[in-house]
Length: 398
Image (cartoon, rainbow, N blue to C red):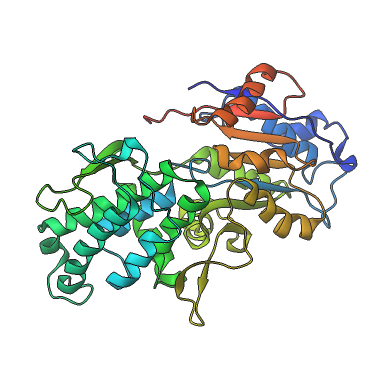
C-alpha cells in the first residue's frame, strides 16, 4: 500500500496564519508507527498551526476536526462486525413478523444484480430471500431458549434453519448494498436493532469487539444449506473478519484534543454502535459520546428502537454528512471543520464542502472511482508544502 498526499484549494481562517516557531513545532509529535513520513509531518504542522500553541488560537472559538469511523479509525467496519456477532449469537429482539418488516424495509422488489444470483444461476430479490430467512427465524424463535423455546444455542446451531437464517440475512445485506442506492442499503442493517435499547446495543458492541480481537484477519464465506433452498435457492456470501483498533488513529484523535481542537465523529453506522467504541476508555479513542453524529432510528418512550428512520434527520452518508455537520457543528461554531478524515465515497462531500477545511486525510483502500480522483490529487502534490489532502496506505494483511 502506498502513501501519498493531496488537497482541494480552500480559504484559510484569518486567525491562524502565523508561521509556527521551531520551538512550537517540536512540541507536537506523533509516533512514527506506520505513518508515511510526509503525512505525519503535515498532520503535526496542522496541529501546531491551528492548535492552542498558535498565536491566533481562541479557546472561546476552537477549531474542530471530523473523523469518519469505519475503515478510518479502525480496520474494517464495526457495524458489519456487530451484524455478524448478532447473527452468530441470535441477538434479536423481534418477532418473526417484525423481522419480515425489517428485512423488506424500503427495499425495491426488483431482482438483485447478477453477482447475487443463486447457485443455480437464478435471480433473487428481497421477497424471496426475506421469506426464507423469516421461515427459518420462525423455527428458531419457537425453539431457542433465548426467545420462546427451550433449546440452547449450541443445539440450535446444529439445525439447518440456523445456517439458512444467518446466511440469507447476511446475503441480503450484501446484495442490497451492491444492487441499490446507499440510501436504501445503509439504513437497512440498522433495522435489525428493532426492539433493543441503547444499553443493549452498546453491550452487544462490547461483546463484538472482544470476539473480533480473537479472530484472524481473513475472508469468511457462508453458504445456505441445500436442504432448505426455499424460494431464493442456495446462496453464498463472503466478508472480511478480524476487526482491529488502529494505534495511529487512537493517537491522532488524542493529539487533536491535546492541541485544543474539538474532535467529532461523523459516521454512516448506527449512532449507539459508534458511541460505544469511540467513547469507552477501554478502546483508547476516548471521544465524548455526545460528539458522535451517526444514523438514527425512531425510539419509543422507553428508548426502544423502532423500524423507522428518525424523522427530521439526514442519513449520514454522502451529502447527508455535510448536512449533519452543518446542523451540529457549523451551527455551534459558526464555521466548518479544519480537518476531515475518511476512506470512501460516502466521505467525499464532507471532505470538500467546507471552505474552512485545511487538511483532508484519506485512508487508502483502493476503493471508488470518485475518491480515486481526489487521491490522484494527493499523488500529484505529495511532498509539497501546500498539499492539503493526505493519502495514507495500510496493509490489510496486518
